[in-house]
Length: 35
Image (cartoon, rainbow, N blue to C red; front, side, top):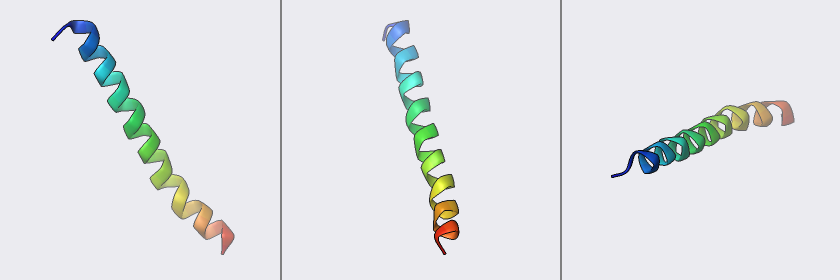
């Protein structure tokens, strides 16, 4: 496996995990602010 593809995969996985983490953080907060 080339080094650049491993770097791209790491960046892709990090972006997805950050997106999911933000979704999990913002979902309860928005739910609380609505109520």
